[in-house]
Amino acid sequence: SFNVSTYREDNYWQTTLVEGSVRIAEQGRTVVLKPSEQYTEDRCSGQRKVASVDAGLYTSWGDGKVYFKAYTFEEIVKKLERWYDFTMVYQDEEVKQMRFTGSINKHSPVTEVLRFLEMTTGIRFKVEGKQIFVSKILIKWDTVVYAGNTIWVPLTKHKFSVMLKPKIPRVHR
Image (cartoon, rainbow, N blue to C red; front, side):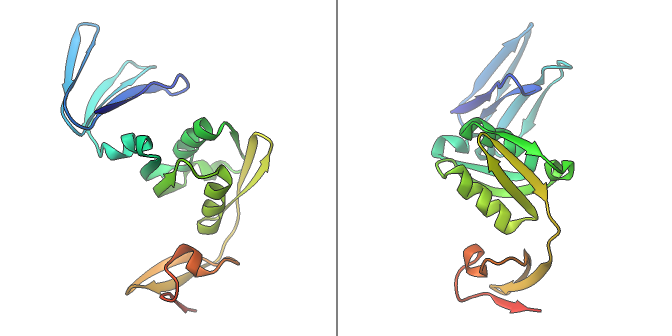
């Protein structure tokens, strides 16, 4: 199985192989991919490369979830805009470069995805029709000891049990 990503608005196209083999033949050059390899071609420069990747990050959408690892907010938003048919309007350019690791259930309403991001980051959203405005806010951070590990969490009006398992967190101030 494999995935092909050829969105017109992207500056590249790519094929990611999960299992089996894929042969890519273009302009007299042939490449055969092995499992967990990805072929990428830059549409502007014509540069081509093959890299080893975690294929699940590129094929998980077929299972209704999308996993991402150290993706920029801008990269995640491109996917969300395609699924939910909206346009993101950035009121703070820094937000585009924020990095995230996690997963999104493709079948969740966009408002649920946005609400989770608001609860766990320093960004806020305002929905107006098919436009979603995003801005960065100043937040205060606190530490929580969870299962013996100290983690940083934003201080919000939401209870920690929303983000962590109930009854376990112990807040230190």
